[in-house]
Length: 254
Image 1 (cartoon, one colour):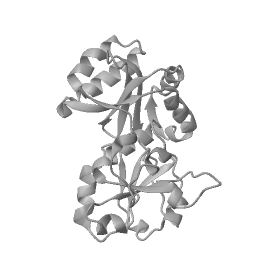
Image 2: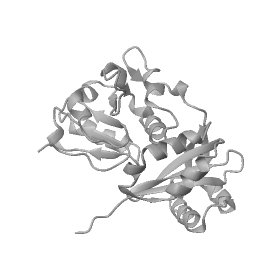
Image 3: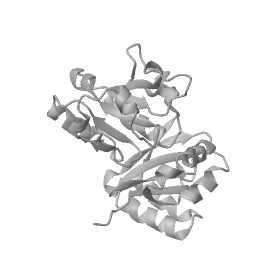
Image 4: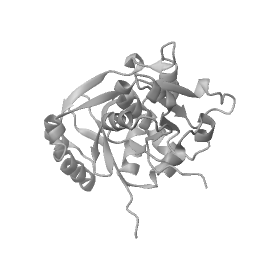
């Protein structure tokens, strides 16, 4: 029986097992919201085999043989939902330098940018190294976000849960927010991935769709919590949350 991937938004799967030390370093540098899969059942899997897996998000990160042979440790990114008229590997894959992995994951996960936005801006060797195609980013402190959060008009249970978890993130001090030009892109992404989100315990899903469907712009940031993460769309000027989405893995009964 073929192995299956866990239900998760962003997955990094290992298919080469020649360098455990390099793998440990990759896991340390990977975004906290990314689910890593270290299972020898995937050893030697080809791109064609990986594309046969059920991946709800539409993309998959892969640490393959080239990752561990290349001193730069570039990671393969696959479009697991290619257009029917162009299913070639060249058109539906690119590689990303580890220092840009977090930014690529963040923008793909909330559909702020799509696969082609990165694949079309790689260097000659097919590696994405410069975030020049991405919207402007802004560093925010956890403290200023905590000050602004109570001014939100979002439902109290959602807002209170968010603030409590944000309080727990004080240790990271700052976070990087990405400028979202049109919030409707976020709504489209959530609607398209409704079934996938149903596999997790989600707070604020319908409220976020309703608000982002109205359009406008926002700053978007995410931060990890135990077994999940929050995504927050905040007003670019006041930093008051205008949409909040909390995602956690469901616990299974034993």
